[in-house]
Image (cartoon, rainbow, N blue to C red; front, side):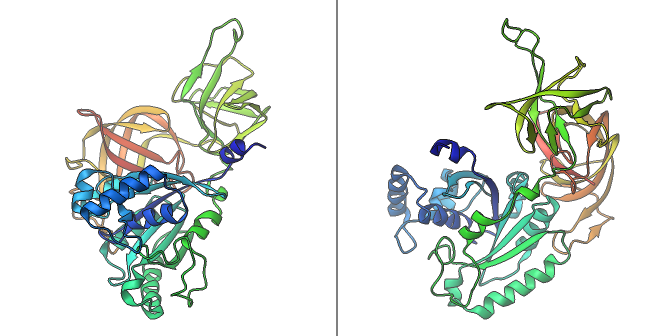
Length: 425
């Protein structure tokens, strides 16, 4: 295998960072990129110039937060406003980082960055411990069914690397997380500014016996995070080249949302319910005998069925729910408040439809997870349970079973802005 193919075949881990303002998210990412030698020379020179202009920090005299805080307003205020994506790789794995804002008014940005993540890093200031934003971000990570959460107790250098401080914070977070539905929770004491336990093991915290943050990111098992049982293939595009070479070619392109599809499998097409067998599976690298989530591919069927964008190819003996009345938790992102009777466009997998909000059941207090049933005023950054009715039947699974087929976005038809992210219950 060539070096280029080996790189393409590497595991891809998507992770998001969250935490309160000034907890050091951007500095942490900068430290990871710096210590793992993932910064280009010209980037480094630009950061050094900017650091000299506004004042450096850290042992290198470089403000590492500037690697991710790309907006001018972010650099001036020293905060993260929008989601910043960064890409890097180590010899073991490729990474996509979503650096999300810490301010309460940017909770919706965190939802955007975390929606496709395998893992969330939640930073906690060692001087402050468990605070409201830690609870909020932990709850959102649980709601979005992020399979792995790593709590990084940062700024250990400011509490003299004391083990008791770390253990006390860890106990508080574990007590709160016992109310949440999270599969895998880990804790690491770090100093992003000094580099302790980020990429290199800390000599100043020899009482901590676990792996560094980078070790955890490189070795955490993520292939089991996908649903390989329920076969779901939302059709995005019908490929009909109509050339002499591919005169009869009719392929259905899309990204597999669940399960494993094999050549010869008997499948059904929703909503028609007609059945056929898979004749061929094409990918960018040529024909394959099987394809699985989250691969993108083109499926060809033995029979000429009427299949179009928004339809779904599934196994005949394992079909999703089909319905127009949907119950879901929603993270509201709109500037206008959510009201009963409002109408929105929706996107669900590759399907476009419209909906009406039938009922707002309750709002969630994200600090103590209590339901607020007497306050149904849903504003930006609120989380609530609602029910909607759609103009067309959707083919869906519960979000806890499949994140791809269990999620919906609501769109304001007047300006085409995404105003809500929904998780089907």
